[in-house]
Each structure stands twice: as C-alpha cells, then as structure tokens.
Image 1 (cartoon, rainbow, N blue to C red):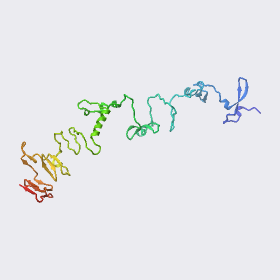
Image 2: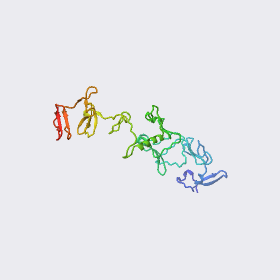
Image 3: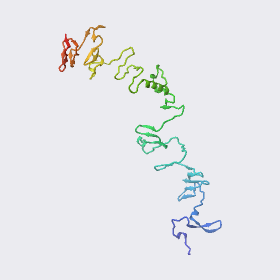
Image 4: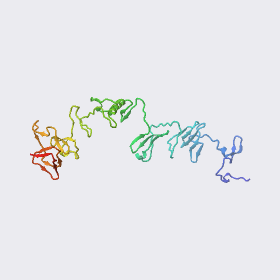
Length: 343
C-alpha cells in the first residue's frame, strides 16, 4: 500500500461507535487502534475557564467536571449549571420555561423570594387575570380564584383561622371566635350612649327570642312591637303607648286615597277635621266636626258644592245649609223613607 497523506483520505462524517482510529500509546511507544466509543470515555476534567468540551473560537464555554461524580456547564468562563453526585441541580441565573405545562414532582417547593407573580403577560388586565389562582387537587378541587365578574377573590372551601386570631378589614377587627368587632356595633345596641359589644351567643339569643315571638306562617305573634320615633309598618297604625294615642294619616283633601274603601279614617288638614269613608268621605268625631272659638264646638262647616254622586242611607235624614250647587254629573239619591233638608 502506497503512502497516503491523512489529508488525502476520504472524509468520513458519520462514524459509528465501533469504528477505529489510529492512536499512539506513549507509555509503550506503540501505534495502536482505538474505537470511537472508547475514545470518548476519558477526557480531562477541565475547568470553569477551560472546559473539557469547548467550541471553536469560544474555548471558555462548554462542559467540564468540577469534582468526582459532578457535571457542570460553563459559559464565558463562569459556571452556570451544576449537577452534583446526589442529583441536585443548581442553576446560576434566570430560568425561563416555554411550554403549556410545567410539572414539578417534589414533596416540598421552597422559594426564597417572598413574592410570587402569576398570569404575567405583556399587557395584564382584570380580564387576563380572570380565573387565576391556586387549585389544590382532592376528591374535589379546592380553589382560590380571582373572579372578574364579582371583582373578588373567591374560595371554594371554609376558612378556619387559629385560636386568638381575628378577621380584620383595613386594620379594624370585625369578628373573632367570641365577639363582633366594636366598629360593627352602634349605640342602638345599648340603652346608654356607650356601645355594648355583642357576642355570637347574645346575637343567637336575641334571634331565638324573635324567632319564638314571630310566627313564620300564620299563628299569633306574642309580645309587643315598639316603634322608635318616625318608624312604622306599612298598612298598620302605630301607637304612642298602651294608653296613649294612635297616629293616623294626615293629609289635605287633594291627598285623599284615589280608591278609598269603607272603614278608612284620616285627619283632613285642609278642613282641620277627622274624616271617615263609608260610601263617601265625611266628618267624624270632635263634636261631629263642629268648630268654634277656643274650645267651643258650635259650628259645623261643610262644602257648598257637591262634586260626587252620593246616596243617603236608608232610613236616614240629612240636613245641609244652603245654598248648594250640585255639579253636572253628580247625583244625590234620597231613598224612600229618608229625607234631605236644606235650610
């Protein structure tokens, strides 16, 4: 075989592990062969500045071993990643993971930083934050989520705080295991000007008393209803006390009910008299509507224009002072056995 320069050999760009290369054994001063797979078994450990595996024109970037059973990557002469003999991995610098799912199979996740950011996008809004939070897997998901529609953090489970701890809003206590915060209570909880702290038990007792006194459906209410000044229940007439007075509605003639019903009673501030409704409004009480100077009650005043039809009661007599004008469309009916006298 003629001598051939190495540079003259055919290029072999895809060697396999069992291909051989010539090699000089300096210990025995012999030329031998070595398989590709054996050649790659042993390299110098290298250093941070000069790694064992480097790249053309970038000799301080590559792979080296800083110690027994350790593997490291260096970039620019500085160690950036280290895997030790226990499998622990240390990365110097930031770590960016691009993907849809990142799985961490660890029993404990420890983060030195005291602030965690989630839903980090180029332009964050409440819409991009909607639904974000934490999900703990269980028989059902246990979640803490931000819900944009309610503008609130929403929890799927109970909250159980430790003994001697309390709920606060803006630094002010609102509730603990035995009492409500004083800021929730007003002077109405006490008979004095000093606010009285309420406890869950006292609130429950008050509720139970009210629950016993007020029937849920039908039945009879027991006990008294006491109205503060200016308070009332629509459709009911309050009284000042058990022996005092009832507070009737007060209004002008124009403010009478549009569709009155028999039995209604009120005080007419236009006529300065009490009035009731049977089939029409009429004066009642106080000397039959009589007035006069001081405490005198000798004069009975009435309208001199009749605008609404009216039927005198059967077997009743009516007396009016004239003259009277009966408007068009208004009719006064006097049944048999009744009389209407105009004087």
